Amino acid sequence: MTTAVCFHCGHLKFGSFKICEHCQARPCTDDELIVSLAMSDHYFDQKSMELMGDYIREHGHPPKLDPNSEKTFRRNFEEVKASGVLDQLFQDRDDS
Ligand SMILES: [Zn+2]
Image (cartoon, rainbow, N blue to C red):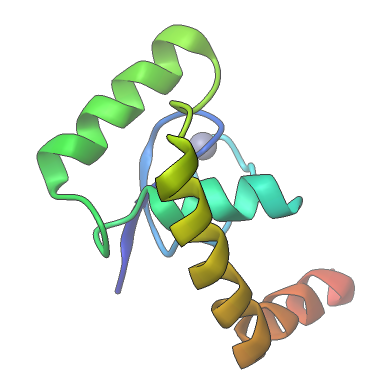
């Protein structure tokens, strides 16, 4: 299971796109989804994710990705989107 940083409150949670049990936020927009995908143990170690969490708690928003990383993450995100994983998540949401 992926460990990821909540884009909203900085809490470490399981699954980039899952609802945060701490603040109940779930990434919805492409930008929120991309930053959630980026801030996970696919790309960063535990220590870096904790630092990102601290940043979010301090500033109220996730650290800005540099343009090159953002491009990479956006491409990865398009792949995730194309894989249909997101459709499953959004189906779950429609049911509730
Ligand atoms: Zn949260």
